[in-house]
Amino acid sequence: MPLEEFLKSGKLLWRNIVDPSKETVDALREEYGFHELDLEDTLSKTESPKLEEHKDYVFVVFHFPIKDPKTEYISIASLNVFIGSNYLITLGSGRLKRLDDFFQRLREHTKERNSMFKKGSGYVLYLIMDELFEVYNRYINNLNRSIREIEEEIFEGNIMKDRLYDIMSVKRQIINLKRALAPHTAIILALEKLHTRFINESLVLYFDNVADKIARGKNSLEALDETIDTLHDANESLTSHNTNRVMKILTIFSVTMLPLTLLTGIFGMNVEIPVSHDQNGFLEIMGIMFVVFALCLLVFRIKRYL
Image (cartoon, rainbow, N blue to C red; front, side, top):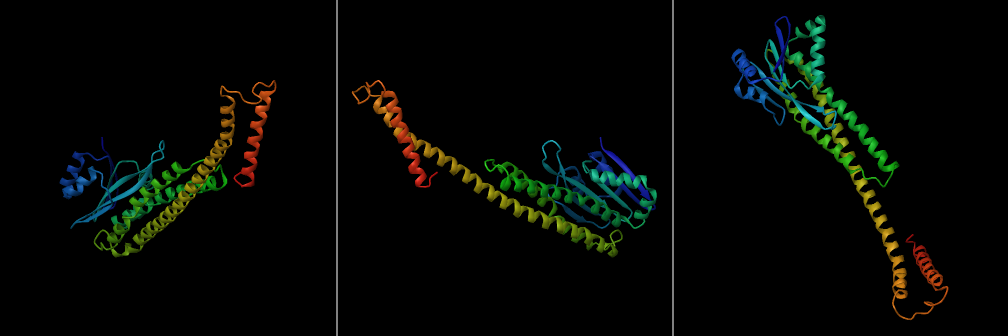
C-alpha cells in the first residue's frame, strides 16, 4: 500500500509519496494535470536521471545509491520529483533514509520548516538535493577505506593470497556510482536555467553548490577508478609471480626425482645387477640415490635456480 505524508507552510505544500500505485498517479493526473509519460516513469525503473520541463511544472528523476546490508551490493534508488510554483511532490521507494529523516525533521521543527518553505519550492528542492547528494560522499569514503585495505593486503600482507574478488567488488561499486552520479551534472545545469516562478534566478548559486558537490564526487570516483586499476595490475603481477614460483618448485622437484626414478627402475628389473644380492645392497642403493639427489640440488644451487 502506498504511504503519503504532507508538509505545508504558507502556500507551499510538500507531498512525499512512498511506493506510489496506479491509483495514486491517476489521482495526481486528475489533480495537477501531469503528463502521462512522466507519471509512467514514477511507476517504472528509469535507466538514467532525467528532466522534463512543462508549462506549469518540472519533472525530475534523481538516482541515489543504496547498499544491501547482507550482500554489500550497491543498487540505485530513483526519486521522482514534480515541482510547481506552490507544491513539491516526491515519489520514491522509501529506501532513501536521508530523505525520510529530512522530512521528519521539518515536521518536528515548525520554525525551521516555515523559514525554508517561505523561500519557495525551488529552495526546498535545493535542500532535498543538497541533503541526498551527501549520500554519495559516504559511499566514496567507504570505497576509499576498502581500497586502502586492499592496498595494504597486496603490498604488506600474505602475497600468496589473490585479491581479485575484492578488487572486482570495489570496481563494480565504482561503476554503479559513476553511472548514477554522472548524468546529474546536466540535470543541475538545466535546473539553473529554469528562471520561472518556482525556480528563480536567485537560486542559481544554490544549485551551483550542488553542481560542485557532484563534480567533486565524479573526480573522486575517477581517482578511485584509476587506483583500483593500478591495484588490479599489481595483484595480477603478484599472482603471476606466485604461479611461476610454484611451477619452478614443482619443476625442480620433478627434475630431481627423475634420476631417482631411473635408478629405482633399473634396480627393480628382473636381471642380475651388481649389489642386488649384496647383504647391504639396499643401503648402497639408497646411498646412491641420496648422492644423485644431492648433486642435483648442488647443480641447481650453482645455477641459482634455488
